[in-house]
Image (tube, rainbow over all chains, first blue to last red; front, side, top):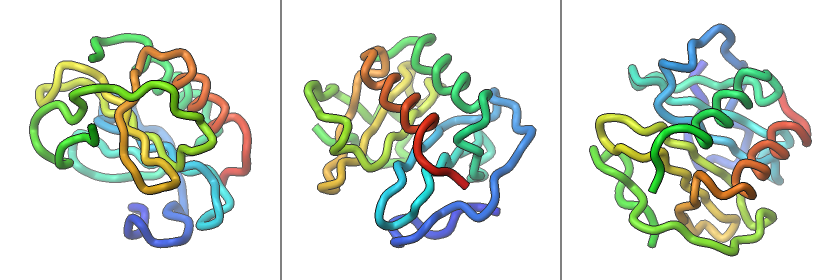
Length: 75
Length: 75
C-alpha cells in the first residue's frame, strides 16, 4: 500500500513491501518517530514513480542507504 | 539554501548546511544520483519545518540515518 498523504499527523505506512531490488529505487525517505507516529518509517519512491514503505529494520535497507551515501558522486 | 522544487529534473541542492544537531531532524531524504542530477543528494526536514541539504559524505549524516534505522520502534 502506498503511504497516506504527506504532512498528515499519523503514521504513513500500514504495511512494508519486501523483495524490491535496490536498483529500482530513486529516492528513500527516513521519517523519524515522533508525536505523529510512534514508529520510524522508510518510504521509497521507485523509478517507476510508485511509492512504497520499507522495513526500517531490514538489513538491505540500511545497506542500500549506506552504499548510496558512500558511493557515487555527491556535491 | 532550501532545495528547489521537487520533481524538477535537476539537482535540488546548491549548497549543504553544516553544524545541524541531529535532534532537530524530523525527516531525511536520500535521492539517488540519476539522469536528473549527477550527485546523490540528502535533504533534511527539520522539526521547525525548515528544509536543508546535507552532505551525503559527512560521517554524521550516515551515523544519524544508521541510528534512526537501528533504534527506535518501527512497524
